Image (tube, rainbow, N blue to C red; front, side, top):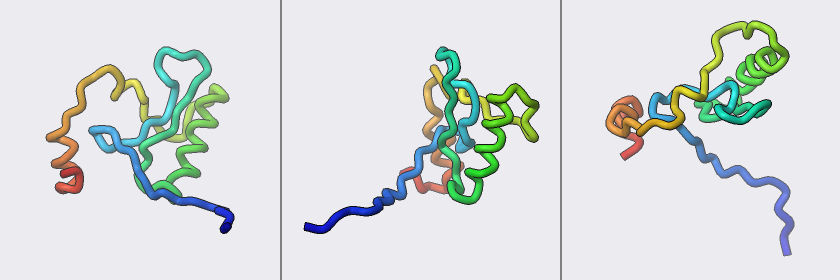
Length: 89
């Protein structure tokens, strides 16, 4: 009979190069993505600011992490495992 107020799964998604995805979603006009950001709560405000600058047509304060770099390609699982220090095994 208890009500659930909040749930935190603690799951983190990563792409093979372990870098964030920030920018235009390839192939879909006016669709954007911020994802796979390691450090979540601490880096999210910066990623949000970069995305806002990008969407508003401004030059982002620092380069964004183009999501197209990880689309339509086979993941390099061995490289990702090596970068993770074996955490992906």
